[in-house]
Image (cartoon, rainbow, N blue to C red; front, side):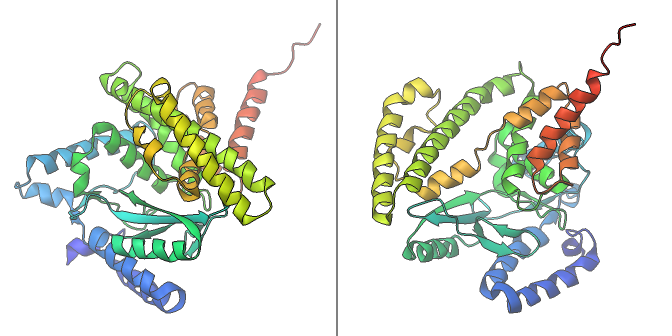
Length: 363
């Protein structure tokens, strides 16, 4: 059983974890906690140590390449970016599906009031994860029955925030170099700094690593440049639709009026999106949006994860493109959890003032 205990920071943590799970079952949300703990136990606690797997000498080429790529990316995150050393991604979990969990989020049908769930340690969040996709769909139907707009999306990894070793999953073997690096470094960032109730803030950080990892002139960077540009264009489209909806919801008095305005805005937005697609986008990644059903949950979820990254690019320039210095400033902002953005703005302003020096005195 040592392969079980070695997946945890200390073998002694397993018993308290079980006790906590039982206590939460009795006092918090029993069926949900039990289902999630069961899925977590299968995929994380029972994950296998990569070095022991490699020592056996019977790995297939695809899995061996996944391990080698992850090892290189972990070294980059720690040595070049200054992220905290960890044992994350030194274990492996073989699962049948091509994603880890299904995540449900919901907002009101005539506005952007979000449904929230309260979790131990993490606090109140805007989503609910399920290892079992059927349970996610059941939760989505329950919320739709209460009149909410609901989105179910797939998530490929999440950070255990240093309490357990985050494993590699078998479906990651098919990931491109860019996708794997972005995901691994993103989760390593969570393990380095997590600001309570600022999950949006944490989600934004990983974007900065792309340029540093690949370089401006590399084939890898050029291959993902068009995709990145399209992603930014799509984010701006989401923001514009969100703003238009928000104005309508604020100005109209009745639920019926707000829902009618929503449908009208969506119809016009889809038509405009289809008409201007070839002028706005380089790839075909988002072409299907004009034909899909849109609702507040879809717009809100994408808006929530498409925040303004300009602050982080300004940090990058402020520290003369030294990404380790950017990471250090982000770590320091964890001591200012109420408004980490304000902390970083003040930090740059203080540096500019300090380095300006005293005015030259006339003799």
